[in-house]
Image (cartoon, rainbow, N blue to C red; front, top):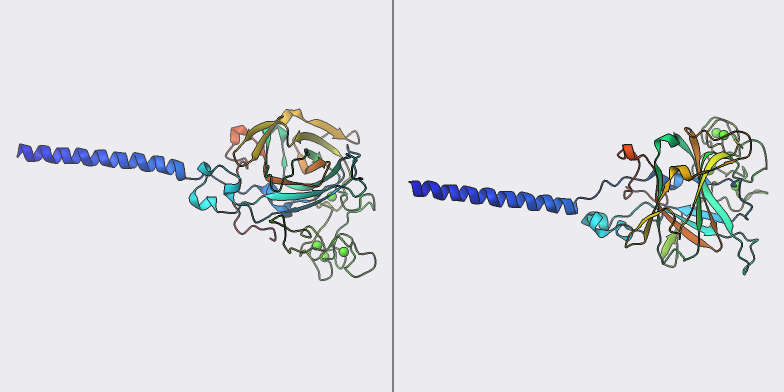
Length: 342
Ligand SMILES: [Ca+2]
Ligand SMILES: [Ca+2]
Ligand SMILES: [Ca+2]
Ligand SMILES: [Ca+2]
């Protein structure tokens, strides 16, 4: 009887031991395979952006920018394999790819940099006192990222809305009101910020929207996706929707060399460069006596200086509050049906 009892005890102990080992192994396993909490980064979503107005502090010639959410990059091209589950390895990532072209007035052989960029109005303005650093992740991919020096600028605050044919008029260029000024897209209004339909005299030949994909060096591009005519959206320069063309420049400015060490926090094995810019290294740029309201920075502009045609692949941009990291939009996620097209 005793013998039987002790045998049962041994069996039980063995069972508990095996069970504990199993739990430990499965915990370890889930630690390895469970993915980080990837979330969509709002600053890589193409429709949030429009072309940038001219930075107040540059005299460089204006190049052009074509920006799109390309569909041919997988998570595994960007992040370390150890951070990804098997499913995520093959999922597409939403990234914002910008094709930067130099100004046509720049003569070959002369190194004069061009500028071009993007801007947006932030529905939730940034309060600088709640931010510790700006994090920017750029993918350096030798196939699509020619090795040339690019300077990226980040402006935050009050920024001129006059991005389409600047100086042309004192009111915002907009599509609404071509037929009825009612906030709705009436038939005949989706003809671009030039307010002239294709085929009519004076039409901007570069404003036609098309989401057709082409391939350049094996990577997809969408050369006419930023057109405002025929894009099924009511486009406007009046980004803050106050009925006026805001022209004040009063903002804070950061800059970083994308091939430089300054602010570089980390490079991973895939060529993902993570920059962390301390929030207090800004310069103030203003064209009047209006100082930037650091607690209410409502426009964001990112623009680039570059000596040759190139690309920038933005993986994420975050304004990080380390005390509230779960609320900051720190991480990135593969898109759900996101697309260049959207
Ligand atoms: Ca209308
Ligand atoms: Ca047009
Ligand atoms: Ca439109
Ligand atoms: Ca406005």
